[in-house]
Length: 443
Ligand SMILES: Nc1nc2c(ncn2[C@@H]2O[C@H](COP(=O)(O)OP(=O)(O)OP(=O)(O)O)[C@@H](O)[C@H]2O)c(=O)[nH]1
Ligand SMILES: [Mg+2]
Image (cartoon, rainbow, N blue to C red):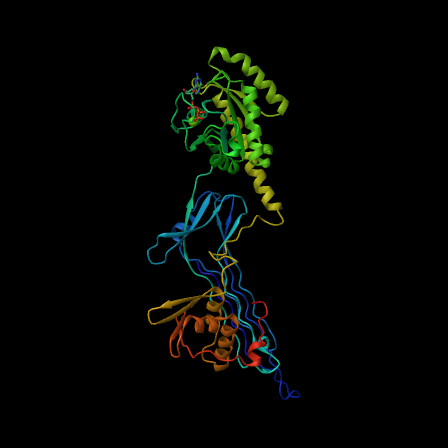
């Protein structure tokens, strides 16, 4: 991914017949476009990125005379399916080195490579004593990096409920998946996914490890798995119509789990939910089925009585759940189209706001300066222009780099490096007035 370079600021002075000594009037360079990934519910795979591997955003154009600013480059927007994980790769080893993001919500955006800032034109460097600055800034190069995209399968519907109610058995009954099923609680340790197919619908269900009272506070295996439910558009709430282990009351269980979901995230309480009473093959289930059905009616939620063991009621559940999932998908697409501001998250690199303005490291035969600002200043300096270089030195001094070097024991003639540029250290010096009176503008 290559973001657009910033355009160069312009070095120019007004020239008109009746103005003998025109003032500086170089325009600023435009900012380069960024490369942005966006989660698109209409994409179902990463096939667009299988054969094309290089993507770049537009560069900003250069500033011109008469204070004409350059144009900003267009961002490059790359659609990816929901459930795409994004990692930065080391450019030599191609091994992942950082998680950049996880695009799970329709419209979620991730800026993976930021466009370079445009350089300032020479009017920005006017001070009381430097009336005619004969330099301008170069544009900042756009960020460039290799990334890896991985599409994690995301479930449309999550099966939740107390342990041993038969969630994994239901995944097995609805799909070709064969998750582990056993008669003791907490058999499922990580969610298992099953692809459900009916004549009309394709969708994915996941079972979730059994939830218990207090799950939202981290009891049982709860907490980690409630996260998975957040991603699903429909909740399938499963209860055991036999009372199951410990001879439970399915209606009370239903209420308990609802409270846990709502406590974890109040939005989960409004998520479309269907209620499934499982194990209706067992004769003792009849009374509980009627009670759960009544509760479902009261809550105005669709209700299904099924048996994962015999398959009774499973085709009807698959069909109705498919219709609901597709309805939800359509609703989310429409919602996205209406959204004024798409849900946006921007990755701003590993830098933190409380980071020091620069770093100073002793190297074997010299010193190395790092940091976002000094590095950007260096790449934006026109090294063929002495005045620009002098201005850069004054910027360093103002940032405190000279003092830090002196304090660290730098000696005259030591080499000081920033990126791939090396300077000779010339010892502490007094700042001239015009150096203190700098035009920093937005930087
Ligand atoms: N009779 C009967 N038994 C069932 C049915 N569904 C599941 N079971 C049994 O119930 C027990 C628990 O089933 P699982 O599918 O492992 O339950 P789970 O909800 O996934 O359990 P955890 O993963 O531990 O939360 C097993 O012994 C299953 O054989 C059913 O429809 N009828
Ligand atoms: Mg299970």
